[in-house]
Image 1: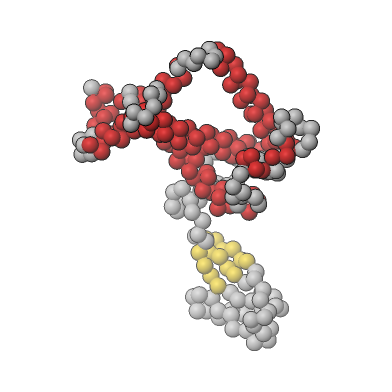
Image 2 (image 1 turned 135 degrees about the horizontal axis):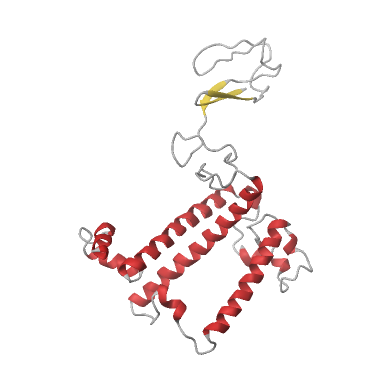
Length: 266
């Protein structure tokens, strides 16, 4: 039997191991060194008793997380100051919304940094990222591209919502996914898997891929914060992130975010 101590409460967890101890000859002690009575509340099977402190990380050490955030979700550190996840059904949708935004942010950050590096080094004559949307193309006008993107994104988002309501439904034959149904093997919303979206097979058993889920959501949250930084940089300095980095490295003590913000406001 194991007693877990969390602040002022106790949690008793039973662990039985008759191969290590004999039923009639037990020596059960707590980590405080006090002996325990075998006759009252211990089971007939041999047990070992230890007392330990629960160690669940939270976004603010010492803060009690909300009861509906029990640590089972990937990246759950008890952060919900607005109480958005109190409703279980809403919480499921917010989890998917965060996951999608995190993935878009990771793709966006990688794309911005890569294209900005090509532009700054002179390898390619690309526009700065916040002006890329105004670029004119010879093969199609802006209105046509916008309508095509709207239709494609609308189709994909509709299919994602259908899979959220009925997990695994879009991997079935006849679900009208341009013949890609066989490539979508995932049965959990947000993780379609298969050779198309999981070509390296890193998380085939998605139910037990807790560590990979945690890494993804952590990197995704970092990318969302980076995108906010890119927006602020573009509005204040009117250049890309690589140029900002080069300028800072050339004079790190006099080119900082504080000095830049002060100069822009003056």
